[in-house]
Image (cartoon, rainbow, N blue to C red):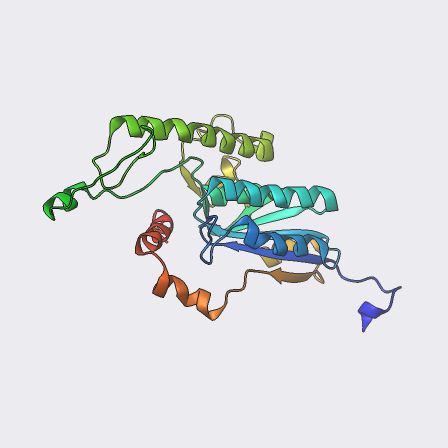
Length: 265
């Protein structure tokens, strides 16, 4: 009833936006800018929030989607004058840490994994298996670069060099984003950009995070005990929940599992 009485002060509202999963343009239950855009817009606009909290649990993925999602959060934060607090659960690594840097502050659990500021290309190779089965790979291209890193052909040193050259500007963009968002909080003597990871307080010590804290107690500390938390998260239909098992690519599922497995999850 109090919310309808204009002269009674309402408790502050904080929107809680959950960002969980791998990051990919075709996010199968994961994270992509097109899928998250409506949620992010509502989180910043509905109910005049005092702040937005992003809860991150992601091993990374697409650098472009990571950039687009983080940029959308930052744009709305500036336009609406709403601060952003990032809370890391199990992991915010690679693209997941890119998202965490959208927060004005980053809070972690003692066991949270952060970092992996680097770029990875991974695939599979089957040339020996194909040879044993008597299968011949035939590739015809109109340009020498058209068959880059073909998994059915032996790995070529020139392909590896070209892939590394492609990764370098992406890595530099990632580094620039982290430096722009974390600024002087980063410890200059720490080697932060070689894809190492840190845990909990270790991430705080090198400036990748601001402190050890959990969502509810920290937001109550910042906005008072009566703060009202409003959650926003992706909803999946029953078909989407089981679709990956029945219709998804086995290799895509393996890649997704491998992304989490790199951090013991």
